[in-house]
Structures are given as C-alpha cells and as structure tokens.
Image 1 (cartoon, rainbow, N blue to C red):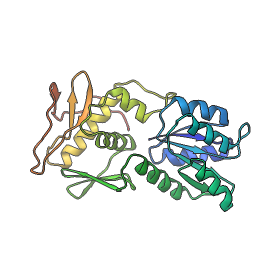
Image 2: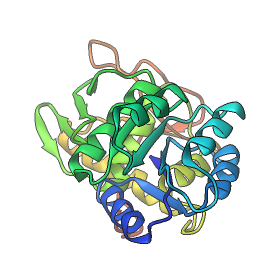
Image 3: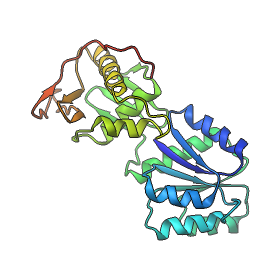
Amino acid sequence: MRVLLIEDDSEVASSIELTLASEGIICEVVAFGADGIEIGKIYNYDLIILDLMLPDIDGLEVLLRLRSAKVKTPILILSGLTTVDQKIKGLTSGADDYLTKPFNRAELIARIHAISRRAKGHSESVIKFDKVTIHLDTRTVEVSGTKVHLTNKEYAILELLVRRRGTVLSKEMFLNHLYSSIEEPEIKIIDVFICKLRKKLADAAGGTNYIDTVWGRGYMLKEYNNEGEASNNPENTDDTVSECLLDEEG
C-alpha cells in the first residue's frame, strides 16, 4: 500500500511515517498543499492523509481541488480541528474519514485498513483461497490453520496477487507497489521476494505451489477449484518451487 501524507509538522509526519512503515505501508510526505494537489493528481496512491492547517493552502481547499480534478483516491483527514461542524464540513467536502489529533496509532492503522477495504470493494476482513487464509486487519497468513511468518514485503506481494487474481502482474507493478520512487531497488529483487514467498507457502501446504511464473510477463496467482486442483494454466508458465538464488531481506 502507498500513502501520500500532506502534513507540514515534521514531527507528526515522521511519527506517522514510522507507524505506517511498521505495517509495511509506504508513505510519501509533502508539507505544502500545492505539492499535495500536484502529486495526488499524477500518481496512483491507495490513500491520501490530509492535514487541514497547511502553510500555503487550507486543507479543505486541497480536498476540494483534488475532488474537482476527479481524483478518486480515498482521503483521510487528520487534523487538530475537533468540532462536530468541522468534521461534518470535511466529510461533506469529499473526505472518506476524519481522525482528530492527538490520535492513537493503532486506531490510525485500523482506519486506514478499513478505508482501503471499502475502496477496493472488500468489506470482509478475511480472504481465503484453497488452504490459505489471509487476515487483512492483522496482516497475517495461515495455511491449513497454521500461521506462516511473512515479511512485510512478502505479505504485500501476496495480498496484491490475491486482490488481482486471474491477472498477470509484471515485476514493475510489484516494484511500484512495494517502494517509493526515491528508494526503488533493482527489479531483480522481485524475483527474490516471489521465490521466498512461494517456498514458504509451499512448505506449509505440503508442496502446493500457488504462484505461477508467466515467462516474459510476470507472475500470477494459481487458481484452485474445490477439489484442490489447479484451474488456470496460462501458456508459458513455470509452477516449480525452487531455491532462491539471492539472500535478500524483505
């Protein structure tokens, strides 16, 4: 998940950035409303967190300009303005949620995940396929009822594959999902993450491989029917589970 934070208080911004990073959420920060409008219109974020008291433009004006520009990204207002009238004004201007400062970090994370589920049409907090269960609220994964430890990057890849099931995802799509433009590593790191994720799931599922390699295109989630048999088999795929060649931490 990628979040744009429009917040001019550097201490608050740093605190939010660290909180989101602990959940595997990428956060890009801008201090000015004008920058937030420009970046929000150009890049595809999963969520925008918006302060209302900005140094150049009122936060509500930022909200209105984004919505008038047809930006449909969910927006969470995070503000020290606490009256009911101010909350109503923010929500009726196009915000998806309103959280007041000071805020509880756990509540912020819970609201972010709730907004994300609503925006993507997933009101449920659990996704299941074959033997795998993904708990979206806690970002945990179980295979046949046994918890499988995944790193933040591995979890983010699995959730993206599940949400886009039936679709081949390129390495560039994974890279854009996992990293900000400032810190993008070499694209081969995606192969390492996929390899480790595939092996962890296969080890827990008795050798079952859930991720297909589609040569020249990327990766996709392998679909299984009720009998546990693979139901999708695109051309030029490799479903073998092999050892990872590089040892990179995710």
